[in-house]
Length: 523
Image 1 (cartoon, helix red, strand yellow):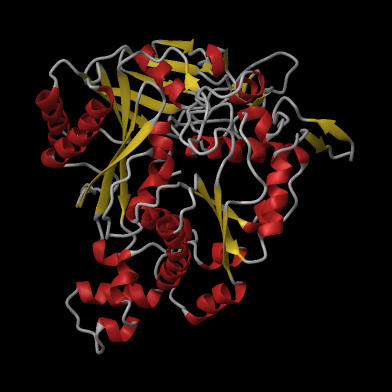
Image 2 (cartoon, rainbow, N blue to C red; image 1 turned 180 degrees about the vertical axis):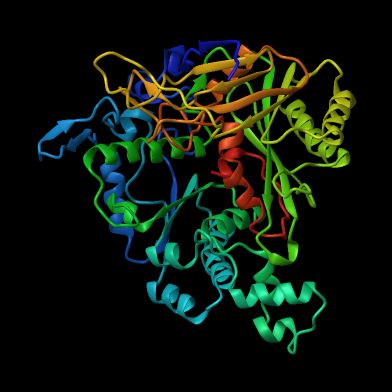
């Protein structure tokens, strides 16, 4: 391979309370506290939690909260059986109130009970997974709606405790979508063959729901909660995790895993309360990043149809979601998605209007991150949207592909070098193209954030002009704003890392009535 040079992109700092900076979010939260302080007009130091789940889980929930309010020391057992500290790789957790300086009461403000036999009966009575999941979501959602709209109980966040049976029976499995019978039916129908029975006779009165909803409880519940304007974000937890147990196979978390889980779940909670736990340092003012999202609909009668959306991340680290229209966005080779000129204009127009509403100005620079080369019509639509608002906005298109076919190895004397090159290593091909190792060896942790020798991101300035080193620095920074997981850094920028999850929520149902733009409702 011919390349220009190899450089190292410096690990970005994060900003915490009082402007203090560190590279590891756990260090910053422990030493300085979160970047933004949380307060509630009813009680400045206490969270109001709504809890919904099986009627017998209240004590387990209380114990769960009690455990998260105490220090959790990072200890692991070696193969020899000896207990040792794992402080470097999975730092100890000091306790929720010590980190965030707010109270999390053990007793929820509202507890909605669902009988286990009601759950079991629904699962046994409905064989079709999609309809079963839809009915299960409605069972939970109707009870949340009643409390949210009819009772004077201010709820900051809903904890939805998902029994293992729902996780097992109302979740899309890998490689599973429709039964062979259902697939054959749609295949024959598409070829013009007529069925002996009508669709409703074959699949029941809920035939339309069979086609238009997801078979994943999490995705559909979040989608419907957004439609119904449930103001408090949802935090779903599969029941075994209340006892700090893995789901499949079931085993008790080691102490260091327990500390890791505590960091992640409480950081997510804090962000869903509406405050950023940290902010990226040295992000240029007036620069924002937009990641394109495409997701195919799961229904076989909508082959090639996909939902389009965009994730916009501002210079303060916060994000917003903009849903575009559904359409035939899949390219002829069935490997890439592309908008037409009209739809790309509409999607970026939504984002620019929202930015102006919140900042009373337009961004100075806008980087669009995509997984595929932008088509000419697609890019022209983006340019038209910029020109329609402010011609001075500098627009740049960046194509980012993960798992690029390049390997690099460290050659260090007297060291096994199992972890690959340093995270941040970049191979510059030319002024517009590079490989970036967002996964790799991290000296702070003395390990890698990859299980295997990592592949880099392939990054190319596809449209517009920008300095390739600046682009790589931005992408490194965007690997550190995943508020859904308190880790040193992701292997992909946040503009792309949540694409599939957000797309799965947006395509969970066709009946999308409400556009919720805050990122906290989708994670």
